[in-house]
Length: 348
Length: 130
Image 1 (cartoon, rainbow over the protein chains, first blue to last red):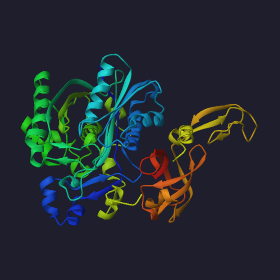
Image 2 (tube, rainbow over the protein chains, first blue to last red):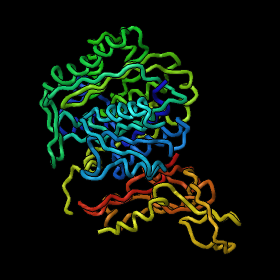
Image 3 (cartoon, helix red, strand yellow):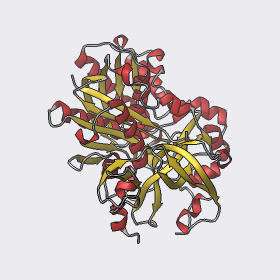
């Protein structure tokens, strides 16, 4: 049996409400909240970035996996906000956690699906028998331009998954990936904020790819949506995952546990992986879980997991996603938020 | 430009709280030493310090060194870790009026400073209240 042996999430304590952003730009807070189904989002502290968030998430994954970090053979961090353009985020992480130095490390980037990409490669290494354990992480401190619709959703957080063969808590039953050249959202080299093609990010991008990967997964597995206890999709806002779930045949109840975006925002590479963590916090042995990520550019990675008898033994060994979302929150005003996110131009 | 060699040399302590424990008398040296100040032994084993502790004392920095000026006001405290070792570090992610002596903290991995716009990023430990 191959699958997840440990998982851990981390979300910053700072928040900004959609209402605060809307009032700054003269928009109607209620129509924004109703339109995007977003109440608030996480904001990274001034001393937090993709590396620090990944380290904290991976610490929590190690607490649940209860393994020697030295046995991890590969570390992959998926993010579109790696702090360095040239220098791998994972190199800092392995030294922080006592992994390696005999370890394969890489930084991945594929818009919002870099995290599921890291999970997929980590899983494949273990499946190939190359190593005992591999760590795949999805983390972002995503940015939206001031006044852009993205500003309501771009959040910070991440989740780490340790893949292995022993004491598996969620077995990987099937995977499928779906990719085409679709320029719906991008950030050119050297640009600070990403650009997007407005409504083109919907049907030809998000929906086409998630449905493409999702349908193929269902066909491959010969399972139907009603066989699953939980489903989670990439969450760029509150509405899209509900709509795509409905189109694939899932009910609102199946999506509920992993649908954390109204209080978290879009953590990009950490979006569907953190939704999956919220599901694993509550899932019971035997539950089937359906997950499909989405990354602009564009592509989707799909997984079918089956929770095992080992899962309840580790659920309480590290902070749960809902606790991270609900506890110790510190709300920022727009000025503080702009300072935290370095939106204000300063003299060097 | 920051001294990258020194930064790299201090990684075991700054990233993983690695200390030297005297195998003769049990004294814990953080950062590690070559000779035990208590029994003069030269034999140490490497241990990892606890990542939890309590606030012994703290102060609020309102006028800081240049590289921390955008973070003011911020708290710096002396934390007694569960294994008795005391470290000086920033206490973050809290409203300053909530910090109190005796409160429990956890050590987290954070960015400490940036070497200007183009230099290296320096990481290490800070404390958050539980």
